Length: 117
Image 1 (cartoon, rainbow, N blue to C red):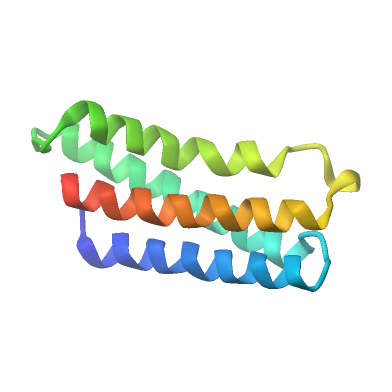
Image 2 (image 1 turned 135 degrees about the vertical axis):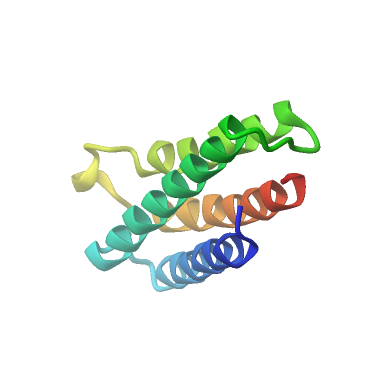
């Protein structure tokens, strides 16, 4: 796992959280550009988890394999859950703050994955 990539993913997630808080403060639901960035962040998280899996299969040992796998699974599963696919018409300002909260949690998870690596 490359530290610069993990840190850049965490920074993208923090930026996404700030954007989500701003949307919430303005009383607006997530707009299309925001959701596009959320999708990009999810792709980054999937690639990050895939690279970690390749490293594990290649023989790299982590500090705690169960914790590492749990954080990896959570990092790829949380954004799709909070997005509620198929609910575009029912989005509210609370969706913006929910995505922001999950983004902060994911930034912490990515940094924790880096420390376990």
